[in-house]
Length: 394
Ligand SMILES: Cc1ncc(COP(=O)(O)O)c(C=O)c1O
Image (tube, rainbow, N blue to C red):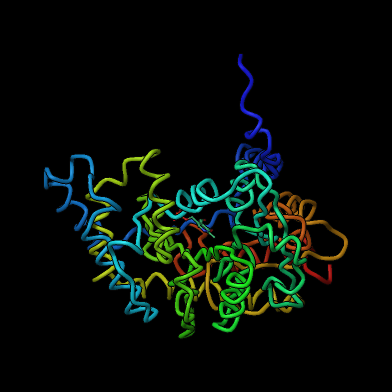
């Protein structure tokens, strides 16, 4: 067999392998597992969006290659309108917005569009692994920005040495944040825009959870900051907002040169999303509501967070995302704690080390547990953790 590329070998080993093995064992043994692992909405896509897809799929025009420059025009116009309504950001759909086959695809390709060997990529730790892995594969040096509880899980930009910042091309941030559930205020984006202007860096905000918010919280966009369109690109997704993870549709918005660079790379790699999916997403952007889905997640959040806190934790209720970032009791690492939860309580959580070394004191519990209509599985998870004496007080 021919050897694979050295860039593929640059990817760190898969850290969830052990948990996947224990999960398979538990299922094999017929255990009733409560899976708080994956962040994938368990509820169906709203019926009116499915109807919009069916309508669009009946139009033979959608069956052909999409030869538009940056994605289906109806999609680009609808998401531009939505970003204006939601965040007050005015964009040109022809040059500042790009259709993506899910935001993961766009984030990964952005690294390839901008990074060369010797460049620095500023990556939060813990973080969604796509930023780091693709920076490494593109040959860049990754500089980790720790996300610590004492800094409200925001990176400390002043801790980045000037020599590193001068070599950096991308600064990745992700608010609302996976895995910590943290949110950022507009002041943070103002600092980040200033920093990126000073050092000529592209600010990349992954806003996949920008519309998965609760309690009236209005998430800011990095693009709201004056001057952001000179230095920033932001990624949005339909996956989490409208329970559309399998549909693979999202968008990038922001600096026109960054959009053009990403588009140039993509036009040599893919041939865009099925136009019927893009048109159904355009319908969703203009007309669909996710209020009901969010209400269910909020209810589950309260049951899980309040339940864990009754065992002695002091976890704030996240204002956005599907995730609860749970400090592990002091006798454990994130890996040994996740294994103990699985073996002794039948609860699957993701060890924080999988998101980076600064994630090691935590496990991530997701609120998208399937088959849970009103939080009963999460209440059961809390009971099991208590019974197994796996709370912070043992
Ligand atoms: C932080 C973050 N960004 C992006 C994505 C990718 O979402 P999409 O389905 O749009 O590719 C995810 C999915 O889990 C995520 O957690």
